Amino acid sequence: MYRTASVLLVVFLLFSGSVSGQKGRMTLEEYVRTYRDFAIEEMNRSGVPASITLAQAILESDCGNSTLARKANNHFGIKCHKNWDGKTHYHDDDNPNECFRKYESVLDSYRDHSDFLKNTPRYADLFRLRPDDYKGWARGLKKAGYATSPTYAEQLIRIIEENHLHQYDLATIPKKKREAGEVKAPAGVQPETEAEFTVDIVPHRVYVRNHTDYIIAREGDTYEKITNEMNLMPWELALFNDMSKDTPIRAGDVLYLEPKRNRAERGFDAHVVEKGETMHLIAQKYAIKLRQLYRLNRMKEGTEPAEGERIFLRHRRKADDVVRTVDQNQNGEPKGPGSL
Image 1 (cartoon, rainbow, N blue to C red):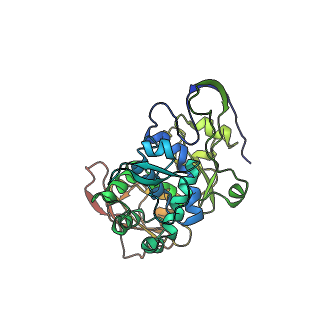
Image 2: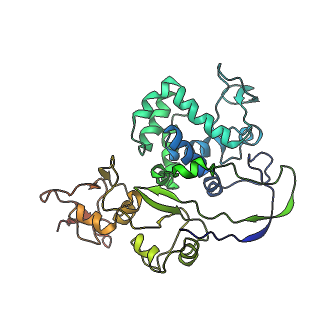
Image 3: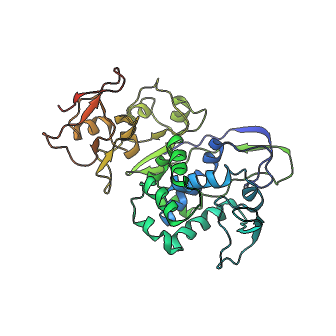
């Protein structure tokens, strides 16, 4: 269904799939773009939320720039422990010259991180949480002793929210794509070399949320570029995403490639509004048509819910249970019920 657009461009850089030997610092944005597929794949395989995996990796590896990440491909600061029989790397941490696990690739580090949490009894309670409860996971990791910092949970939550990493917690890589082995370590030239080479610009990976195909926008994406790549009619992208052709597209935006659903998938009955969230953002998060989301909650189209309000995602709100709304033109102060 989707048309693949490949463009060759010449780049001068030093890059390795394992990040080892890389010159210059990888930015946070570059880190997320490079490794988010690993986090989503591991979430599908193990149940560890993708947002938690990414936030821990960002914090523990300094976006892949730490000595431990560069020399040992260890992006989560996992120490050897008694049951580790793989390669090791010695590094000063809480104590001098501590033993850390060393991996052949970054992907191996991500997989071992998932298995470490899954197979360590003190983290068992985390897997009873909802898959999108990143706050519960962050606090549970701190409580279970993953890190010694007293603000570890708050640091993870801040990284997730400031970079919108929780959007990846609802992502699913289709089974046929996983079986085809499309999630692989990034390719690159060998470390300690600098060469001129050509690469194909990779088409957007298609994910599934609430039985609806979507992509995650990248830096430089435009309405026309995505429409052409995905072989959509000129009007479809705007219609499917409850937006206009003039709506700016930002890196990290979720963009649906087919009509969204009338309700969220099973298990997502309601959403508690957080600061700054709009009805459009909530509709995109759960792949629900915006007009239908307003209808389910008996709200007037164009109004926004107040922070802390409970938005129904599958069943219609009772007629006498109104939503407090805020007036966006009056500094966000409540302006009264928004029921129809």
